[in-house]
Length: 454
Ligand code: TYD
Ligand code: MG
Image: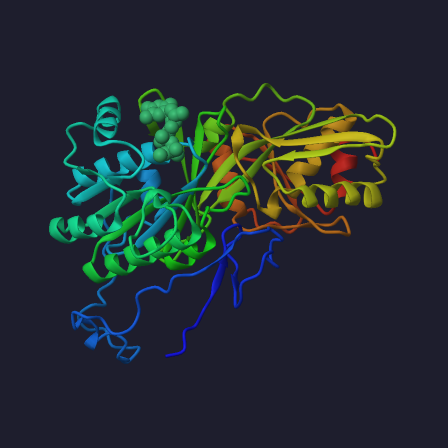
């Protein structure tokens, strides 16, 4: 039988048909190795008979009840999952080492167990006694969670088969190994094979699995993208080490909206949920000051207000800096170019720093106008009107485009005590919850009206 060989780069996860010393995709040297084929073909236990046999698309018999979901009672987690845990689903939770993944999942295991979902937490990183100690510190010692410290996947699968939990948490995928794969735990082939075995096993036995994965510095899950394709849901747990905020973000979800976020705060007693993130992100804000604008954003299905801060200062000749945290650098370059070309406000010879306060990452184009307002405010050394939120997309011509969910944004702002909003012309504001809404056709209008410059 001809053997199909394939090779995978340990650095970027790219597949190649033949071995070579250097990966053509990422350029790394000596990272390519041969894949060990995954178990395939008809199942030995005769389970495969009905599998793979086509059925009519409209057949709503037996297995296809509407998705029943298990709720953990941790509201932030349930929402990010798309409204609870779908039985027999596979979830990957990625994040930097030390960000709090184990803490989150131990709390999640306890929450699910308390809600009547039989949960097993398998740690490959810590001894059972260590996990138990942590559980006690988190006040979870009484939760009916089963605990196992094991790295050999064969033993884990045997245990799961015997215990038949509804949820198995594997912490972490990088510590697990299969004895049929001839490479070290954490290598691409091990991670891939372990994830494959676990997801197939879980689907077959109706067990949900949550795989924990450490992310490399480049922001990829080590061992890596291949796992993302195997699972139903990919969540990232992110945040700044120095900040207490942690954000659980869905980047892929077969059972719910992607881009949903859950917000947590890391405290001495573990993670606590933040039900009102806007209030948290705005809590450290000083009174309206130059270079600050409040953006009324939407994260997933929920409005979130955050502060955008800009600083503009003279640069040493010929080396102006553009530095961005929490927002897209090329989007900043675009807005600076529009301000210069359409409004005659140059930023040449000036260092520009932009920061989304609180460690949030904003990716909505709706933040354009708030970014522009913060930049203008910093450059003109003039504060924006008090208690005002800003949102809208900016086009290259300098005109402002309305964005989705205008009313939701305004309502959230009103709830938090904001009194005015600056939005694009043609925005569908409806009855704006008592807000004073200023509609602007283009960026030049913002410059003229608000800053009296331009
Ligand atoms: P951990 O969950 O072990 O991170 P990960 O699994 O992502 O590597 O979290 C480790 C950090 O969290 C550690 O630096 C200490 C901090 N922490 C708290 O601040 N409070 C707590 O109650 C716990 C359990 C951890
Ligand atoms: Mg951990």
